[in-house]
Length: 187
Image (tube, rainbow, N blue to C red; front, side):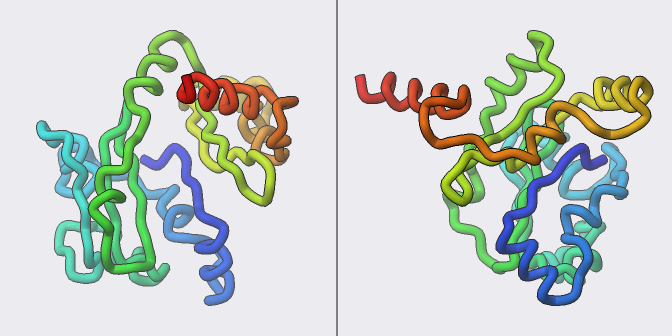
């Protein structure tokens, strides 16, 4: 099942311009796929080679179980890659993936290490509109459920973080961490 999604603002705007109230990623939130099945997610999860599974033309792919939904939302191509505890799916309205996108680096080892050491969530911060924004996240399902039971709502540190933007200057910890990485790389 989908535990989180990120939708690029341009894609969201295109979907809204077409009169859609959600995106393909959001429509997929209620979908549950069987690990033993033949979906792209299952094929990727079971792959011994760890190679991404890419579908260049969703409409003609027989094994893609969400084909109709993808077509309705204008998705033409999709890639699946293994992550630290699941499969990461990314899609596009274009019908062609550049080779570099097919093997986009997912910080799998770093994510696996932080979750094994006790982390309950991860946030990916990206520069948008001249500030750092939380563009995607992952929350351990058991942590989200415990918070829901305690508070009676879905509010978390992560959901609140998505509401704010952080300065690109070194006054935010996110900026400080990125600037430190740049400084180390320059040495």
